[in-house]
Structures are given as C-alpha cells and as structure tokens.
Length: 68
Picture 1: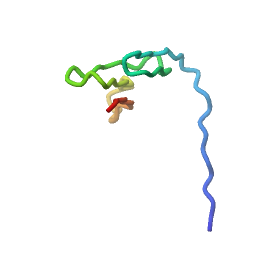
Picture 2: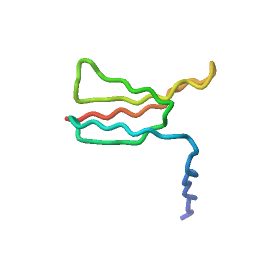
Picture 3: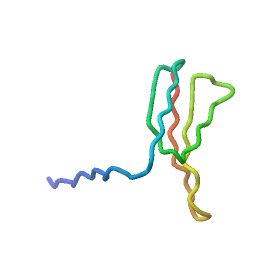
Picture 4: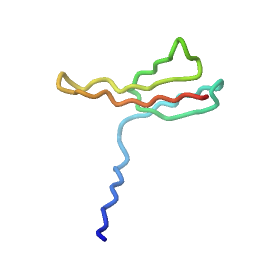
C-alpha cells in the first residue's frame, strides 16, 4: 500500500488578532483582515469570513463556531 505525503503549511506572516467570547467560552486568533459576523437569530454562534481577494475569487473562506 502506498503512502501519501503529509503537508504542513508554513506559518503565515499574516498578522493575527485575538477574538474572545466569554458567553460562548472560547478564544481564537484569526487573521486581522477577516470579518466578524454574528447571527442575530442565534446568539450561540459567531462567524469569521475572509474578504474576497479579487473578482475571480469564487469562494469566501470562513469559520463558523456555534454552541449547542
């Protein structure tokens, strides 16, 4: 059986900012350029979204965290 190489990305030079949410009991470092969005209907979730890079950028990278 063959093996697959494991890819570990190099640490980024992108500056990070810390987001802390005491009501959801977590803290995370995200890129400074990412937008923070709250779900008005569900107070137990928060999303982080990377701005689109240009007009051909078809996917907006994101991270959504919610607590059940």
